[in-house]
Image (cartoon, rainbow, N blue to C red):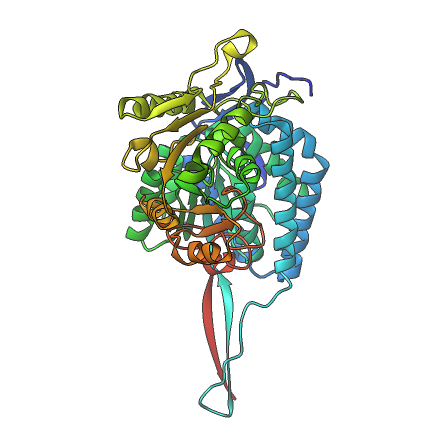
Length: 488
């Protein structure tokens, strides 16, 4: 792929039109692989812009909800087709804007297409049940109705998949949408919104307002005419959004990260476990909520696993994600790089042993990007900061245990509960792990980072608000049940 400089200014999308922010200010989106390259400029909006979007969405939703599910699904099919036609362009923009490799970005964009087509089909599926009434001459049934206007607040790490897996079900069930993407990935979000515009949804049904979370995110949380808020991001911000929505009686859904363990049993296929640990922990530069962070290994195989892991990590090619031979790109921003490096420093200060990497890469063409070596620690106790807090970077903590019971106890001994995996050939160990692991997603002989679009996704404990995204489960959040009793 050839790197391009695109200094276009991207606008908000409100009521079917591309419009500038009222305060006439923009933020610069830069390439984390080369901080001197401008990807584009995005609007730094204010509350007035959000008010305009809410007004448009509220009006549009009255018409949108009256369409049949099949009719709404046709618009999602058209949006999916538009994205598919531009898949390389959108993926390249994603790589240039937030750093993940082009194959990962293209895979994510293709996933967005698949999600839209899945939910387009949901428009033809049942939304209620017939319930036997006590009166034999009456009819009683349930149906589902849309919530109204849904505020969608999304992060930078999956700038196509996460907005789409929130917006698609919201739309198919009859809601209007206002998207507030992360500023760091707002150019990519604008490209996606162009595809929805091309699909021809009724004006105002879907809107995008870019700007700081402290302004636009807060305004979405507080706005009396936004009926629901769905958020993916940090636990501190998520809790604030949840509290604000609760105070005014709005429905809310929060996905707030994880501290995901991989358990390697003494009977594991170590080659498989190593490959999955690296893929789960270091793809996307570790910037996934489901990324492997803690690797809990039984003592009998610990040294062999560690040596294989380090050997494979040394083979990783780091660089600009548009280069075909690059496996791992930069951190998404300088702030994200500094955060990851600060955790490396904290791990050393608290007594863990850094056995590989952990430094910023400042050689040659990588000097102008936000690159770091993957870090691997051992002699980590589960009370250490690097074993408890979400790092969101390429940092792995190895923890040696004697028994699987100890491994599961340590795996559960964090405030998060998003995903977890185990590598073992023993059916009994698999079943014990499934039953005892406090995580919303458990995977056997597979990496911790992996979400199927047709299956429910969400965490336990402080990883979520205990609702589920994706699959059929999405209707539980984006609709309300209405019970109907008919007497002739």
